Each structure stands twice: as C-alpha cells, then as structure tokens.
Image (cartoon, rainbow, N blue to C red; front, side):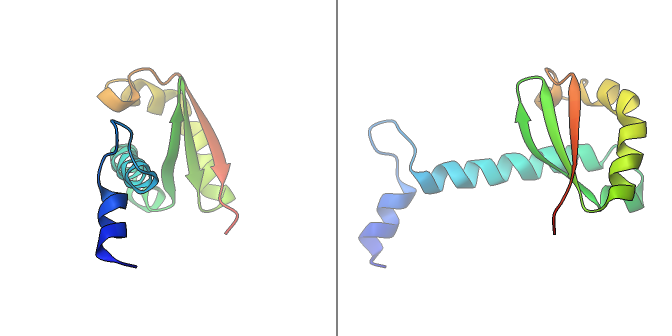
Amino acid sequence: MTRAKIDDLLTERHRQFSPLQLLLRRAADQHSWTAQFQALLPDPLSRDCRVTNIRGPIAVVTCSNAASATRVRFMKPDLLIELQQLADFKRVHDLQIKVSAG
C-alpha cells in the first residue's frame, strides 16, 4: 500500500471520518468502557467480561464463559447503580449479557 493511500485512510475528508478512523474510535470506546466496567468487578470475574457496545439505554457485556455471565447477571442491579455514576454509562438502564462464542 502506498503512503498516499494510508494518509487518505487516516485523514478527514469533507467533515466525514474515514472507515479506519471510525473503527479506531470504536475500538478506543470499547477499551474505555471495558476498563470502567472491569473496575467494578471482582478480580477473577473482571478478566472474563468486556463491554462491546452501548446502544441508547443498553450496554452490551460479553463474557468469555457462562459462569461469568451468570455472576454478572446476579450483580446486575448493583452494577447498574454504580455504572450510572460514570459519564459513559449515565444513560444506561440495562445490561444485555452475552456469552462469547469463542
């Protein structure tokens, strides 16, 4: 890939973000959301869960196994109270908990 093409991917064009910029922004958001969420979980559980999306009032949490997903479901009422104190989760009123396929 030539330098010009890479520069095109990384620069704004006509006030719209390139697909690469959108992906990088999305990855940064997911990393930030996950770090905030994991800080509220006990240590072994925190390594198994990540926030993959926030859609309006719903945060999507993906866990690496069913046991972790079940534990998060039991913690859900308390987690929601704590999450709503954080700016990124202020509008979140529910957690959709999923188990990762692989």
